[in-house]
Length: 131
Image 1 (cartoon, rainbow, N blue to C red):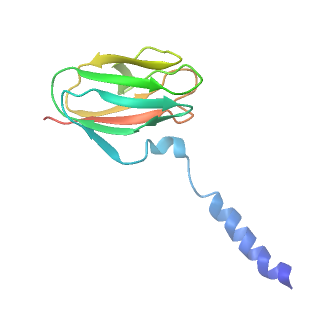
Image 2: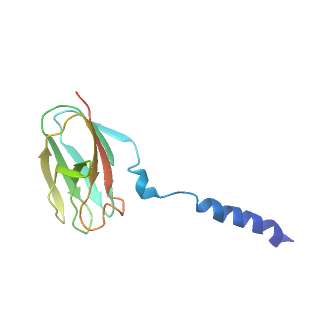
Image 3: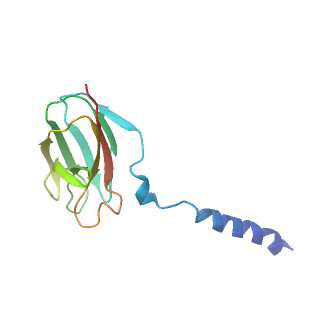
């Protein structure tokens, strides 16, 4: 008798667990960190994430991006728009490296282009506002 009561509950739980969708296509999560114009965008990378994953900044001068690699593997941070690389950091294994990129106001995708790191979750979002 107990088995009959629990079986429908178990089936419902298993069906619900499979309804989450594909997380890779949802993009970065978490709050947006606002960085004042003129300040570098500092991001921490490790297997397989960026923190913060979502950043907003203003200004029209070149934007300095800095990646602190706290992972054990090589990583980079590249800024993309429509699949085209606009700039970012070199690939490196430890420490902090940076680069500058000139960006117009808009939204940009941030990824690690090493191996399959992007597919594993090393993605972010950068929004440049007009001011």
